[in-house]
Amino acid sequence: MSDALDQFTRRMAQIKRLSEVAGLLGWDQQTYMPPGAAVGRGEQSAVLYRLIHDMLVGPETEALLSGAERATAGEDPESDAVRMVAAARRDFDRETKVPSDLVAEMSRHRAISHSVWVQARKASDFTAFAPALEKMMELTRRRAECLGYTEHIYDALLDVYEPGMKQADVARTFAELRPALVELTHAIGESSAPVDAALLHRTYPVDVQRTLTLSLAAEFGFDLRRGRQDEAAHPFCSGFNRDDVRITTRFDPDYLGQALYATLHETGHGLYEQGYPPQYDGTPLGAGCSLGIHESQSRLWENLVGRSRAYCEHVFPKLQAAFPEPLAGESAERLYRAVNAVRPSFIRVEADEVTYNLHIMLRFELECALLTGELAVKDLPDAWNAKMEAYFGLTPPSDAEGVLQDVHWSEGLVGYFPTYSIGNLVSGQLWNAIRKAVPDIEEQVRRGAFAELLEWLRANIHRQGRRYLPGELVQRATGEPLTSRYYVEYLRTKFGEIYAL
Ligand code: ZN
Image (tube, rainbow, N blue to C red; front, side):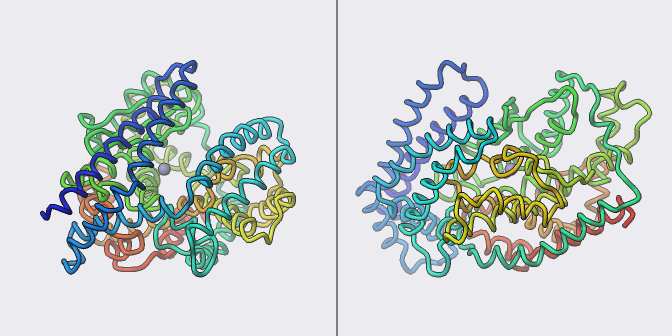
C-alpha cells in the first residue's frame, strides 16, 4: 500500500473508531442509562460529534483524501482501494457542502422542532406544530440547495440515504406499485375469508419471550459472541463494528407479535452488520450500502422468512412448548394466518405487509410537494386526510393519528421515508433470486436450516459492504435493476391464498 493511501486509511480508522464510541453512548442512552443522565449524555455526545465532524471535514483529511485519490488514480476501478476512496469522497463532499452555520442552525432548530412536535402530537394540534415545520422545511430547502442536484430538489436529500437514486426513480416505482396495492387492499377488505389474529393477543410471560426471541435470533445465525439483545422503547440495531452488534426488542405481555417480529426484524439488520468482511473493518467500506438495502435485510428475515408458512410450521412447536397455555389447541396454520392479518389502519408502524407501502407513498408525495412549495404547510392536514381516504378509505379521527404520527419531519428527515419501501421491494427481488439459487429454500426454512440462506446474503450483500451504490448492488445480486414486480407478485400470491381472492 502506498504511503499516501496508508496515511489516509489510518485517518479514516480514527474517525470510524470515534463514531463507534459515539454510537455506544447512543445505544446506552436508549437501553440502560438512568433518565437523570440525559443532559450530561447530551453534552458528551455533542463534544464527540463535533470532534468527529471537525476531523472529517478538516484540511488534514482533505489533503489525505486528495493524496489517496492521486495514489489510486489509474488503478483497477473494481479494487477495494478505489472503491474505498470513492466512498470517502462522497462522505466528504456531503459533509462539506453545507456551511457550518446552516448545520448549526438546523441542529438548534431540530431540538426545538422535535419538542414542539412531541407536545403538538400529545394535544393532537397540528397548528401548534405548523410554524416549527415551516421553518424546518425552509432550512431543509436551503440544505438541499447546498447539497446540489440537477433534476429535482428532492434528489439532493434522497441521495443522503439512498445514494444515486432520484426522485423520478421513486415516483416511477411507486406509480407501478400503487394501483396493485390499492386493488389488493380493497379486495382483502371485501374478502369472505377473514383472518382471526386473537391467538397473538393472549398472556405471554415476558421472561419466556426474552429467552425465546434470543434463541430465534441465534438460530438465524446472529452471533451472540459478537452481539447481544436488549430492550428499548423503539427497537433498533446498532452495529459499532462487525464484532459488536447490538439489537433491541420490546416486550408486550399481552401481544406476542410485538417482540417476536421486532426481534426477527432487528436480527436481519444485525446479520448484515456482523457480515462485513474483516478487511473492511475501520474503513469507509465497512458499513451498510444504504438505508434501503439495510431495510431489505430486516424485511427479508421478518417477512419473507418470518411470516412464511414454512417458518410458522418450524417455529410453532417451539412457541407452543414455551407458551403451552395461550397456545393450547392452536396450530401452525392458525399462527400463519394470524401473523398475516391485513387491516388498513391509520398508523404506519402498525401496518401489515400489504398496506405498509401505501403509507410511505402518501408521505413521499406530500414531502415532495412541501419541498417544492406546491403544498403549503397549513394545508398539510387536509392533503394528508384526502390521501388517506383515497388509498385506505379511512379518515384519521385526529391529527395525532394522522399527520402528526411520525417523528421524521420534525427532525428534518426529508427523503428518508422511501427507503422503507425500497427495502420492501428489494427484499422481494432478493427472495426471487434466492429461490432460483436455492430451489429448496422453503423446505430448508421449514427444517429451521438457515445457513444456506445466510451464506447467499453474505456473498451477495453483506460482504460487499459499501463497495457499490445501492442500484449497482441490486443489479449485481439479482441481475436486474430495482423493480416492484417481485414484491407485488409475492403479495398477490400469498394474500390471494390467505384471503381466498
Ligand atoms: Zn429496520
